[in-house]
Structures are given as C-alpha cells and as structure tokens.
Length: 177
Image (cartoon, rainbow, N blue to C red; front, side, top):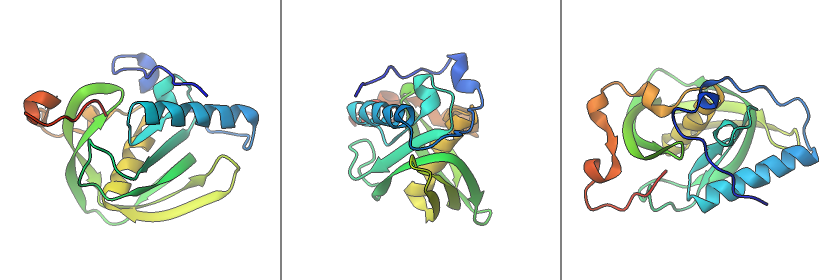
C-alpha cells in the first residue's frame, strides 16, 4: 500500500485522544492497517499507532521477530489491536529504554507495568484477550499510550535518562525507533 509520514513530537494531533473504531472488516480499515504495516516495516519499528500517521482512531499494530534496535528483546507476535483496554496485573513496574518513530533519534528510560492483560478486537472484529509480560507488555503499553495522546517522554521520571541515541549509547547503531 503506502508508507505514510510519521508525525513528530510537537504535532498537536499526537496529543489528542483517539476515537473508538465502530465498524470492522471494512475496506477503509484494511487499507489503514496495510499503510500502518508498510510504514512500520519501512522504518523498522516495533509498533505503530494510527494517530502517529495523523488518523485519530484507536488502532495500534505491533510485533517483533528480530529488531536491530532491540537485539535482546524476546519476540512479540504481530498484533492488530483495536479499541484496546489494558489492565495491569499487580503493581510491579520496571524501567526500560524506549524510542519512538515520533521522537526520532532519542531514547528514554520509561517505567511500565511488568505484566498486563490487554483486550480489544482485530480488524475483523474478533476478540483479542492476552495476558503478557516483559517486552511484549512494554510494546503494548507504548502503542496504546499513543491512543490516549501520551508520548513516552511524558512518562520518564528523571530527564537525565532521556537523550539522543548517539550520546546515550555511543558506538551503537540504534537508528530511529
């Protein structure tokens, strides 16, 4: 389909709440997901939310087999998650380095719930209900934050742990998230 332009931090559309999807299995929804998939793959991202390409609906995609920016991350199954509801399992959180296609060239240490349950629907309207942990939980939380107008720098507790990739990780080729 099409590789779309990803909005960058500072664009007010990234700070808006996305609308729920009301109709599933439509040509428009399938075209949006195809464009999101093409965009995520072209930019070597781990996930992408519709608001990042200027479409204010509750659609997120994510999935990682191997990603050079996250060489130690466990695989995350490719998922189309629409109208998600996230429920933390316990209060335990962990900090981890995150980047974002909307905040290119930077990384930050972000606290996230270690385990959570997410529910929603796929593009055909079929229910999704998963309990996940680790990197999978981190990616789901990051992408779902975009649907609520939240960018990862807004979650960083100590801005000394936020900066440009080449300064934080000299000699590592992390590219943009």
